[in-house]
Each structure stands twice: as C-alpha cells, then as structure tokens.
Image (cartoon, rainbow, N blue to C red; front, side, top):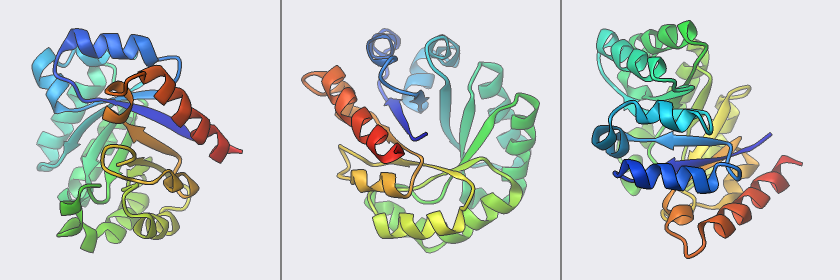
Length: 212
C-alpha cells in the first residue's frame, strides 16, 4: 500500500502535537526534522510515536561513528526510521544500517533534494546513490516529486526498495510521483491549509487511488 506521510516541520511542541492529534487518523506516518527536534527535544519523537510511527528526518551525513550515534539516539527515542544522506558514502550508510537492525528500524537514503539546488550537485550522482543504497541493503529512498523523469529513473535502479517523495504541494511537485513512488511526504500544504483535514483527506484519496 502507498503512504501519506505528514511532515511536521513546526518548531512549537504544542503546535506539533495538536497537528498530529488532528490528522493522525488520515495519515500513515509522521516525519519530523531538525526544527521540531531542536526546539522541543528529542523526546518529541516518542510523544508523536504514540499516535503514528515516526520517521526521524535527521539527514544523517557524518563520519561513520558519529552517524551511528545520531541514529542510535533517534531509535532509542522510538523512531521507526531514520533518513540519511547518500553522499556521505558506503561506510556511513552501513554504520547507520547496523544500528537500525538492533532496533528493527528502517533506513531511508536521500538521492537528491526536491528543491532546485538538489540538481546542482546531488542530481549528478543520485542514480549512483540509489544503486549503492540498494546494494548495502537500506530499506528505502527519498526521491523528489518535483522531477518526475528523474524519479522514474531512480525507480528502475531501486527495484524492490520503497520510495517516499517530498515536494508535493508547497514545492510544486506532482501527484504523478505516486506512479513510481510508494508514498508522498507532505507538510505545509496540509497543516497550513484553511481546512487541514479536508486537504489531508483529498491527498489520502489520491494515494489510495494509486494503490489500486
């Protein structure tokens, strides 16, 4: 089944919990990033995980032993998955994956960012990153909904891996990404909408339609 992942990119803990409570029945997972974790503390992952599984979007990109420490902190605080940057190389990916295995967690690897700058450097090696992530045994990839042709190429390289796509909504990405991806990651377009529940329902219907 394809997923709708809610990116909770706010800074206020109470606002984050309110958004989560309001929308948890309409989404499959939450994704949290540095703004919320740094402002609220890492235990926010545990709080949110009581409602839905949480992806810790720490975009880990450091030497192996530091990458492993970061992943360990996320999983110890009830993250179900972490996101890492593929450009950090095989040794860091393996270090994070080894930690994930201890917690029965998942590792998603960024191929390239969904923003325009993601094409400048990462776009040149994104297919190689996808191939390497698969070889190492990572669970999935983060690939852009803003570049459908590249996403289609990544899908071919990542046969058997789950792909989640950010960029739908505020960044102008297309729901056509669901033709090649296993889910979309949407934040501001949902929780900043005039009616967040209606927007979440609309997107969930699209996700379900592509799941048939």
